[in-house]
Image 1 (cartoon, rainbow, N blue to C red):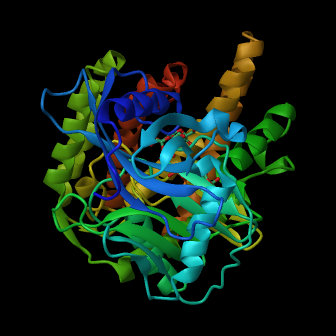
Image 2: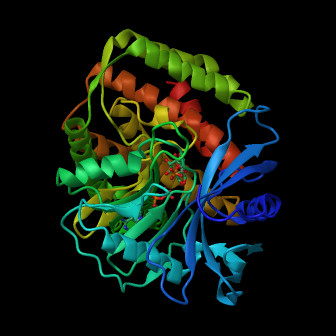
Image 3: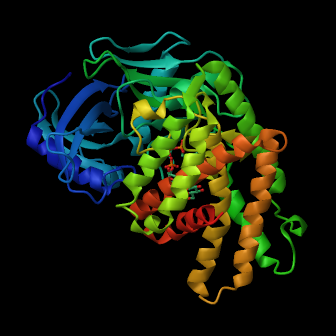
Length: 477
Ligand SMILES: Nc1ncnc2c1ncn2[C@@H]1O[C@H](COP(=O)(O)OP(=O)(O)O)[C@@H](O)[C@H]1O
Ligand SMILES: O=P(O)(O)O[C@H]1O[C@H](CO)[C@@H](O[C@H]2O[C@H](CO)[C@@H](O)[C@H](O)[C@H]2O)[C@H](O)[C@H]1O
């Protein structure tokens, strides 16, 4: 811990209020208590008259969590001024008197381009492979070889829905500041590092990262942020899929292959891209085998945990358990590092082809679970589920304005999903699947749909019908 103490009571209240207002805080809607605020370092590169950027870790406990149980830790970098900065009122966190600096007016630094310029200058100062930082706090900035940064590039915060916060520097680089942090190597950095060094064309190149050495005394570093290539020609894969579906729905009499916005070519290219990324991850990380019975049991346990949250799943419980039980007969399964939470929203179409982003895995899993080797078919199943979501999201949007939306539309939705799933799968597998692969893929798809039922119930309750319908279809096979 460094720097003068800030009155603890003032801190906790200010952070508690702010967390509840942000998009990225994972505990929204729960009764939270900030049980600790740690000042862990200052970003170098402050200019005379500019803000000091002070990194804070905020420990949060929940009234509905286990008493004395685990807390979550969120990163909140503060941009500190000696006077109010009204242009940052929307990101105001608190103000207090500091023994060393007098009155401090503190704002979420991600919203402040002056503060983000300090991060960029620190990366520029950290010459390739030679970290710059503060030995007193263990904070360090790291760079990979091969890319020059311009310290004058202006910063702007991404505005989309995110569980972290990303800032782009012009059209050159994007800095993702991790919000919920856990000691240990961050999988997004770890995988981008390996794939960038291997020359993969399917990911945005890693330029650098920020870490804190051993803040918890466990010997594990804490990864705070990742700097990578900004993909300036990128369009979100899910948005592209929605546009394709709308095209099909607008052409009442035409089939998917006859419509201008047909997605099948993109689905094929996505299949090839995922296969290449999987091959690169297999080369870059340890591989092994896992007993199929263990996997089947884990899927069953996930269903058990989902039932109290989504009681409608009970009607399909027996059928789902049969699907999982079939996996148990498959013997030893090949496992490797995978993406872990792949869907169309994690794919970006650029002029140079498809890129895959966000290798952090499913947000609800622990870091240890997210970094375990797994079957490649988990990611394939994630994509298949997304090909089901896209047409049904458009269908339900249309139904909101026109409750009489035709049954014909539902048939067309299935047609779109079926066509694109098939193109993706054929490209990924390079031909037909074996019987064992089919059994495994069906189980992973069912498992993902169960996960989605829980995810939607907690985050977008009106969407839960989409994965529930998929569960019913899988169960009815
Ligand atoms: N390298 C990049 N270049 C341009 N846009 C990107 C890049 N990486 C991610 N994005 C965009 O930012 C969004 C959020 O990124 P993501 O890694 O999914 O963040 P989070 O972990 O917060 O969900 C993505 O949906 C994508 O549209
Ligand atoms: O992107 P995240 O890592 O935050 O993933 C979570 O949120 C996703 C939604 O944004 C969720 O994805 C589900 O909805 C998508 C449409 O919005 C759909 O394409 C996916 O197939 C579906 O799973 C994801 O499951 C969740 O972990």
